[in-house]
Image (cartoon, rainbow, N blue to C red):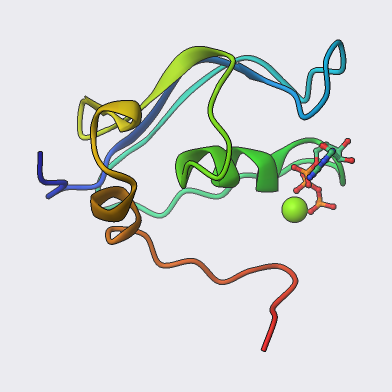
Length: 93
Ligand SMILES: Nc1ncnc2c1ncn2[C@@H]1O[C@H](COP(=O)(O)OP(=O)(O)OP(=O)(O)O)[C@@H](O)[C@H]1O
Ligand SMILES: [Mg+2]
């Protein structure tokens, strides 16, 4: 499926890097297509983690992430990542 609008939806997403140490718990939100969305929170709150999940560097433990109504697990990583421009917090040359 082609991503054409860019709405991002997190549905009850839970994730942790190590067992029994959740970083995101039951997180739901919609970032509307064509709008700028800011995600704010304390250091370590999980902001970069949710962007990593959106790019499928990791996969959710529970819940789902949709782009334009399409579960990101159901499209190729290539087609997903083609739609994302990412400026990293810690850039590497
Ligand atoms: N690769 C990793 N392996 C294990 N734990 C990690 C990893 N990356 C992040 N964490 C942990 O996950 C939690 C969320 O980290 P994350 O980097 O998503 O926070 P952040 O909101 O982006 O913080 P900051 O404002 O400092 O960028 C923190 O407790 C962090 O230590
Ligand atoms: Mg961060």
